[in-house]
Image 1: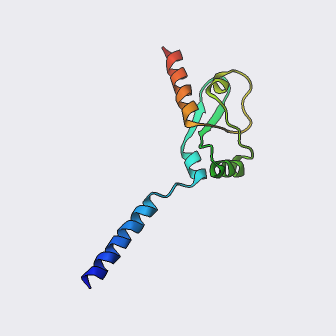
Image 2: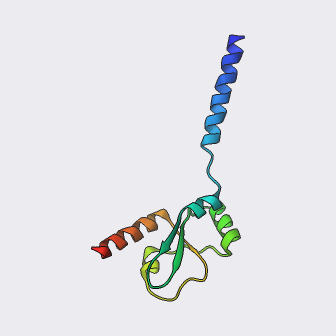
Image 3: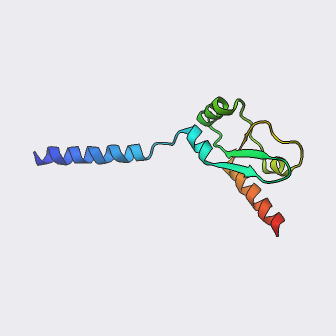
Length: 103
């Protein structure tokens, strides 16, 4: 009897930790990571993973998925008609370039 109770408790703990480690919804993750550029032309970026799930969710929400690099964001030009994606590595580069230009 005690063995069955321990087994049930262990199964509940293992199930809870598996649920806690599930990946968040790709669309929600992209919405939570929005970054707006405050330059001359308004540009909206989302930090996105380059995965099939993220691409599908972003395309469903905004129509087309286009990843940009930090240099493209910093370049002048016209405003974007739709938000674009940037990888976390490129987002760090963009932040570093903004900090360097601020000094």
